[in-house]
Structure formats: C-alpha cells, structure tokens
Length: 115
Image 1 (tube, helix red, strand yellow):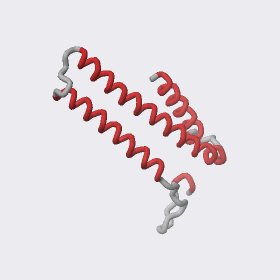
Image 2 (cartoon, rainbow, N blue to C red):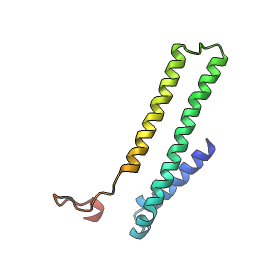
Image 3 (spheres, rainbow, N blue to C red):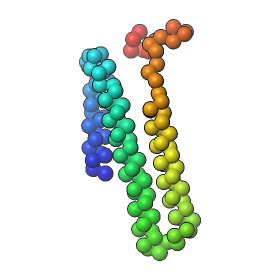
Image 4 (spheres, one colour):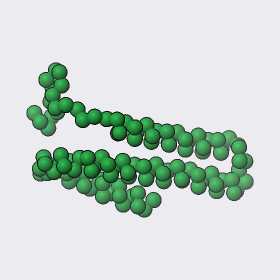
C-alpha cells in the first residue's frame, strides 16, 4: 500500500510539472507522455491489486469472526471484488487499445492548446 501511494504521488507531481504547468516545453511533454502512460498504468495495477487484496483480507477477518463461508455477506464482498477487478481490466484495455488523436479532424477542429 505504501509503495502504491508513493508511486502515485510521484506520478501526480511529475504529471503536474510536465503537462499542466504552463512553463513546461513542448518537447518535454512529448517525450514524457509515453512514460507517463506506462508508469500510470503500473500504478493503476498496483492500486487494483491493493483493493482486491483488501477485499480478501476483509472477507478473511469476517470468516474468522464467524461469518458463513457462502452467506450473503461473503457473496457481496466477492461480487464487489470481481466488479472492481473487471472494471480495472476494462480500463487497462482502453488504455492499451487507445490511439493518439490526429491534430485536425475532418471538421477542422484543433485542440485548444494548438489554436
């Protein structure tokens, strides 16, 4: 959990400096974008892993306290963990399959930063 938080904070600070800070050169933004996406995806996977392991830990503690192994509470915890995991997989698939948009589309619109 600590590693996920530290890496997230580093990703946020570097993303702020490279992409949101107005004084950052365009070359720095272009060079750091693939690395930002890669390390952001790694941090996202770490966060998903932490969340799913948290659900497992909670279920283990509840079962040790006398919760029925196949009771409704156990079903709810498992269902929530599976939904979180599937959502994470779909987000990662959207990252992997995304393409960079062209600077000008067929209507002649440009992003605001390039106007």
